[in-house]
Amino acid sequence: MNDAPSALNLTSIRKSFGAVAAVENLDLSVEPGALVSLLGPSGCGKTTTLRMVAGFELPDSGEIRIGGQDVTRLAPNRRGLGMVFQSYSLFPHRTVGENIGFGLRMSGASKQVQSDEVRRMLDMVHLTGREDMYPSQLSGGQQQRVALARALVVNPRVLLLDEPLGALDKALRESMQFEIREMQQRLEITTLLVTHDQEEAMSMSDQIAVMQGGRILQLGAPNTIYDRPESAFVANFLGTSNLFEGVVTGAGLQTQAGLLPMPRPSTAKHATLSVRPERIVLGEAAAHLPQALLGRIIAASFRGSYAAYRLALADGTEVIAHRQADAGLGQTGLGIGEEIPFGWAVTESVLVEETQE
Image (cartoon, rainbow, N blue to C red; front, side, top):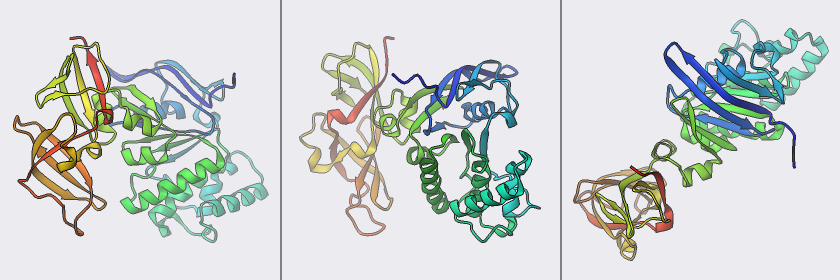
């Protein structure tokens, strides 16, 4: 049994601003070397949680521990943290080298140590030779690398990333996701990331904490949360999902779309069935599936490697389905107005939000 403390531990954290509860009874443990993302919409409490870990906000109650040490009331500069902001927050009048070495200089490190460490970080973030340039002379991606180097050079116990890639364009953002993740794994540095970007959380995290209303609704590995969401909110926020609400019967789930088979028995009276768009089978291949639903294509969109379809059932229910692209560039294989069978394997669906009401 491993009795070593978590690198970061939040216990029963609460925070209100006036009458508004920003964080409610939040518990979270981050293991050494792991990257955990706080994912959720604006106002869910993820940034407030990060700011409490950083020491910029004090919790109303609860405890924050880093490496087993209680830092709940400790000043930010005594917590041993590194932080990267969305806006970079670089000093415009200081060179790249001066920006990176700022934390070392403030801690009293010798000039030789500062020089050696700055040189090492420049090499790590691929900015060797740019130490005498100013932030305004760098691209957005290069500025973000400087901000990351400045956070890492002090050898922090925990790295905090606050929407670090939000200011970058899509292509550069995706490239930086790989770079930051590779660096984080190589350094084995414990990291807490705040983001509203689902793809960013999925591609960078060991675990994702999906938040709503100041609470963590579900915590787990990205593939687990995606494949097995525990609520309709999580199913729809992390990706796209088709949700079928209905009454549980001995034969299945009675929904507006019809009687649908369930992936497992349930003792609840009501439940919601979640089916991902890419799990839906379209056309003749769906004819042998248990539900054998019929839908008319009312919208189609080419999205590169796949085509997205919106189907309408006779009762008005709408379903989104994805199919691997099988037509020419910029085209979809199925046309608007076509009526086709569709369905899914029972094991590809998930029961969420089961209630006794």
